[in-house]
Image 1 (cartoon, rainbow, N blue to C red):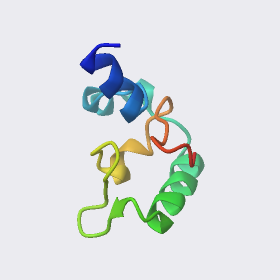
Image 2 (cartoon, rainbow, N blue to C red):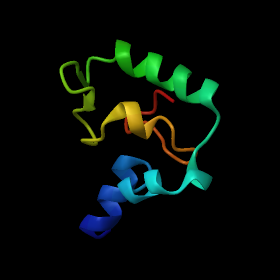
Image 3 (cartoon, rainbow, N blue to C red):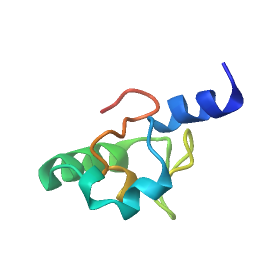
Length: 74
């Protein structure tokens, strides 16, 4: 597996560029539910709301329909 494939697997097959495409956004209730899970996770950097595993800013990542948690919490 290439480094790029490993990275894509880790971040949940989404890209920061997906945030520019409204068609990639999912349901607001799902995003809120995901974010609540993240807020309780020890892997979340509380100051920046960034995941220690994938490096994503979770306030944004949770909105993407195809995004997944790198440690399988959602």
